[in-house]
Image 1 (cartoon, rainbow, N blue to C red):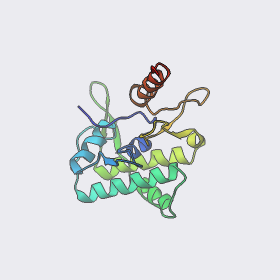
Image 2 (cartoon, helix red, strand yellow; image 1 turned 135 degrees about the horizontal axis):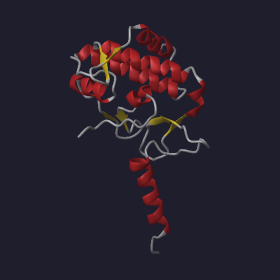
Image 3 (cartoon, one colour; image 1 turned 180 degrees about the vertical axis):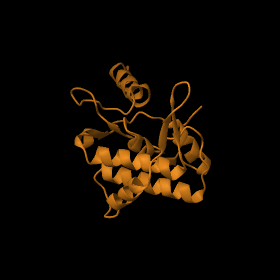
Length: 176
């Protein structure tokens, strides 16, 4: 079973979400090059698991943290340059596979370029104003609120939303 979730509505924010509980009990789901290779495939960036090394993991976490800071308005002066540099690398190649389907091919830097390009489009476009952080106490996941009234509060109803609603129910029905 995968530890990765893809509920942010944008692959760049999904990469940022590979760190859980940033403010309290920080857990990095990209705990090695193999985890990065798995994430790239599970995110749909590449069809086959690419080889990854320590330098690739460092590159991915550098990109991840720059995206997170830019999305939360905590950017450092170099973050914009970091994302732009990754976006300048050629992205993954796509081709129509037989008999149907799409193959995404390339090395790991191509996958990171695809993530950076998604970040550029999101952070520089009209959906930037729709980026929110989950309202659950421990969660620090970011997401794009595409609800009509822009009233989404949780990154995921199955996880954080359900916990919050259950806690609210218990609080309202607590015997005193």
